[in-house]
Structure formats: C-alpha cells, structure tokens
Image 1 (tube, rainbow, N blue to C red):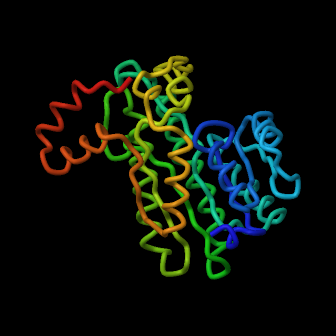
Image 2: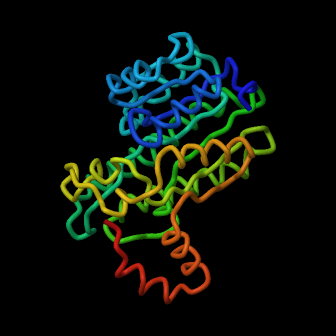
Length: 267
C-alpha cells in the first residue's frame, strides 16, 4: 500500500486534532502526500513541524465546512493545484452535549452544516472531476451515534445518520466506476470531541466526558481506519464492548435496547 500512495494526495478535513491529526501523520508515514485542512491553519502547520514533514509532501489549506455554499470554488482550486486526490477523508465535524428541549434551532443547523452539508458539498464538487478519470476513495467518519440515537446527541445523531445514508447511496451509484466509499463508525475515542461539542446555545461544552477519557486511543483508531481502506471494506465499527453490545441489542432486542439507552452513561 505504501508504494501505491507514492506521489498521491490524501485530503483530510478536520486535520488539526484528534482522529484527523493522527490520520495525517500515519498517511504521511505511509508515503502519501497529505493535504491538511481545517479552519485552524496554525495548528495544521504545527503538525507538519512537529512531525518533520517534507515541504514537498504536505500542504495546508483553510476550509470552513459550515460555509458549504462556497466550497465548490475551493475544491476547484485544490484540484488545479494538487491534481485529483487518491483518498478524501471526511473527518471534520463537531459533536453535541445538550437535551433537545434546551437546544436552539440554529445549533442544530450548525451541527448539520458542519457534519453533513460540508462533506456533501466537497463530494458533489469532486464527482464530475473524478468520474471515469481516477479511482478515488471517500473515507467518511460517521459515528456509532449515526446508528444509535443517544441522549444529548439529537442534532449530532441526525447529521451522522444523514451522512451515512448519503454515502451508502453514493456507493451503490458509483462503486462500479472505481469510486470507493468506506464509512467509519467510531465509538468513544480518546479525543477532545466532548470538550469541543456544542451545548444548546451553540457555545462549547468545555468538558471532557469520562467515557471519552477512557476510550480507544487515536493511534489505534487511525490504524484500524487505514487497514479498512486498504482492504476495501465498505463499513467498519471502531468501538468498545459497550457500544458494540448496544448495537447488537438494537438489532436483535430493540425493546431491551431502548430501556438501556434511556439510562446509558453517554458523558
């Protein structure tokens, strides 16, 4: 796989921290050129410096996924500058920590824009450019919350259900043409996702969930994602025993699952 990534670009949104940051380092170490994108370009530059990236093999670009109506022009510039990517990783996103009754409509809109619409806008911009020209993999970081609607995650779950549905349908339309889609469903991963999560009024939560603090390491998560892409898997769940047990109950014992999820510790 390392040889196949030589001189190829891997584009990563939300690359300034967490899973995106680790994927940036790991794909670079596998021989790929990495395009690091997020709103925080200073953090992206720090990643490159801290990991001694060769200036010829990485680039930093600013993108705000919530401003998706202007993304087409950004993607056109990137394609002109770097060529078509080998892998596009839709990792940028923001979570939620608020009950529906306490959440403003605009906060729900932000969650949908960042977690869903931004990725869709990038993809729709790229599709006409890559159709019948190059095999490209879209790697979509959804969430176990995209399979299970959990308390305090109404808007976040809605966005993650949406992105999973969109890319499942896209896969059915395009896989025959060499466009691959791998959807990742992480559970509790040890990142700052809960600290950066939005509360009802749209401000940051600024608290670390205990379940996140004790979650799977980003190193392990990144390795599993890369292996899934290399092996051509369409979907993979990266989660602990509790999350996987919840998914099992939801499928085979939905009544028991519902009673459990009402009382589940999700912080």
